[in-house]
Length: 205
Ligand SMILES: [Fe+2]
Image (tube, rainbow, N blue to C red; front, side, top):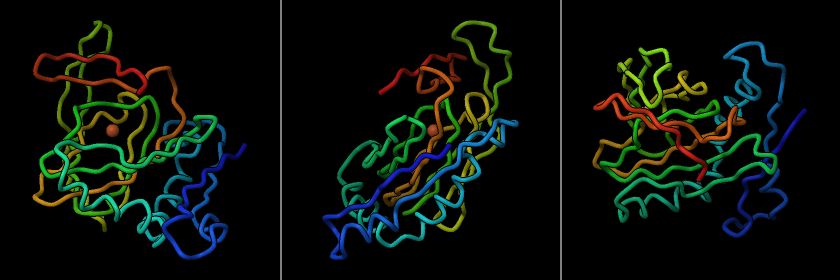
């Protein structure tokens, strides 16, 4: 089974719309599940994001217009989002003004992102408890890394496979491009507060 998304912008480029859409249309294969690293579409997401990172049309229409806006907002936001009609995956462009950061959270799907402008700091955590106590989670930081444009693609797996916080600790705006796979549950993911060993579901937007 295959699914496609188009993320072209007809209005902001002088070339014919069809030509532009052809460059920014991609297909992910939905293969069999053989383990955490073979989630449907997960491996195909790497070349998709790599191509978008090099696509001047995507950069011009979906990235660069938000750089200056990032200087005028106080918190991070999703500037562009394309959900495939079957909700099989979601492409999202995140804008990070200086000093902004998410909560510590996970996702009910796999996800991949690259930093297109500036740099974003990712902190990654692992869960030490077994999840048997409601609303309780004990986290330990695994690593942190500041992703720049040349640093490649970060990957999170669903739920405990990708507990992280993403933010921008630099003095300049940052923009990152995220591709999420199909959800494994009804919720969007979970939010964590390690100061009180708390976790709660994060409902859909
Ligand atoms: Fe995330």
